[in-house]
Image (cartoon, helix red, strand yellow):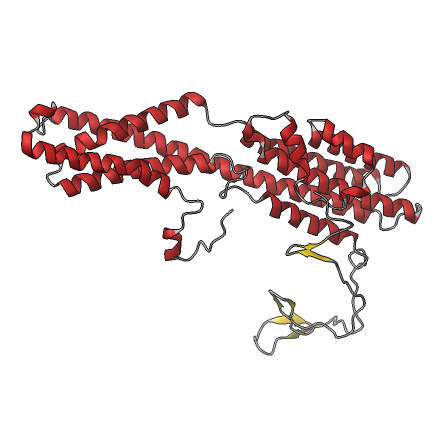
Length: 389
């Protein structure tokens, strides 16, 4: 996906070719503009009757206006629907990741006061994180390659591990082979996660009551529901009759525009300009709709599956660090009485005024209670075990 500052105007955006629909629209509109110039020059020498046209025909003008209005409405409607599909798919993807992380965070926190063997608790947490990372990767790959039409083919199965996983070698070989064999990968891994939680609860790994534990099951189920909502966007395109009729109308408009434009415009230059702009605008809107209808895939305007996976891995690895499981406590210099801020009269503060910026908390005590030296693998954070795709 192309990143840019949407609140500011950058002239370079007008000249950017990568991810733009402008080159294709220009290629479609340019021949019509040239044809309009040729027809206008011919009409100036031999006249309209020999071309079978009449520049005083008002009926043709009214009919043409009606066609343009109908075509414009259909194109704009498709673009608006594509825009809605794009944001619906994007929202479902981020909600799914949020639900999966919330469930993982809850299950890891539920082990805080566990009375079970520490080894069992440790193994559960690491297994859970690996399976969640694998589930997220499988979902992203399934959505990204759903438009190819080979939903159950071996090509998608082979590419299921192109996204980076959290120490997939730590999962037993039989499970990895089974994931490669089945086509319903996401459902299989989700079932494994549910079974893992049930078996861990039976071993008394969780230190919370069953009603609280059920919240994690609900978040996991909601995450899969969001996945199927995104899958609907990826698998179900715009209705074929609608797209077919729209393409035929655009083609009809492309062919007839040069003839009708040069009838009503006196200058050959303006005939080319008007013809070009009409075709360019309509085909640009249609191309935008084509780009936005499915936000999942490998195009430059689709969601960045690799970055989404790396960000999810970063969050999951954070849950496994010892300093993360340490509960924050008040320090010995904590203040318990409010006082008036000397810089803002009338405003009360508690303790010393410290700000939070892009680099973190502005002032931190020099004494450190822990140290973290994660292994750097990429711009998004750490890895656990060998990088496996």
